[in-house]
Length: 364
Image 1 (cartoon, rainbow, N blue to C red):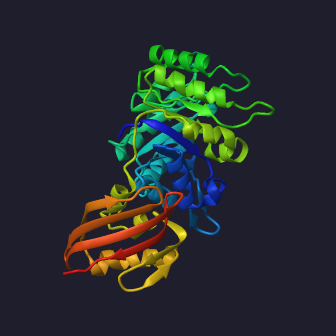
Image 2 (tube, helix red, strand yellow):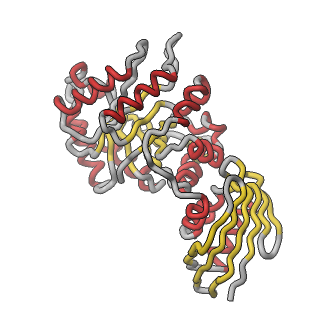
């Protein structure tokens, strides 16, 4: 699966929109992001999992983002001390969340002697479990500065490279990105390049709006399919104006499907969590039989819909109208328990989430 457009890295989910999956998704949609990278592991340890309280932060966020047509990739900081176990954990986490791709974040630890063997061991084991998943390498921007790093041992089994073009203490992203691309095309095994720019502070330095705009303009001029930024956590906390500027920047002509299409596609997953991700936490839904409110009640209703009322349903959008925050759709479906020919739904949206939903249909 290819990447195009704009993406953001997430380090710690609880630090992004208070960890709320619906708000993270609404924010990503508003920013016109096409992909989000979430940290899934650090070495042989889990990331974005509260082992004390047994809270999995990734599952609801990944499900909600994917329901909106936004790709979700997992990233993993690797050390190379136990490459077999790191590779197995990477595959397990990627498959567990049905992620669209996996990213290797390998840095200074892999500059040590003998780590080329560890990189080859890691990649061979990883590809045993992820033979067809897109895999990317994220590491240093200038290979000429880090030739002890085993670039090719990783890249020979990777599909993409995501160099970290962090122009810290400077304001020349165009020069640095151009040099990065040139070096990756001439010094290491060539793979499609998707660079990552900084959206964090270092002491008194921070990237400017002019910097990030120039970074994206240069990437477009170099015909790069996508750009990434690190990280959501720090950008929304410290550099909100930068987030707003990146959100407004039209990196490509990629368009995300409109609300009616996305909603009916979600219904066709027959997954209550996937559909519930479209709703605000305190949304009100008027169903054919009763009025319910809140995510738990809405999720329970959809679970009953998919398992009892319309098992094995296949939904088809037959019409849509409205713009902005008011939408209306008509639909039909077939199921093991009967068919619907007159489905009709009216939605009130807020921040691209359903705040009010009136639904009517009759099974015959």
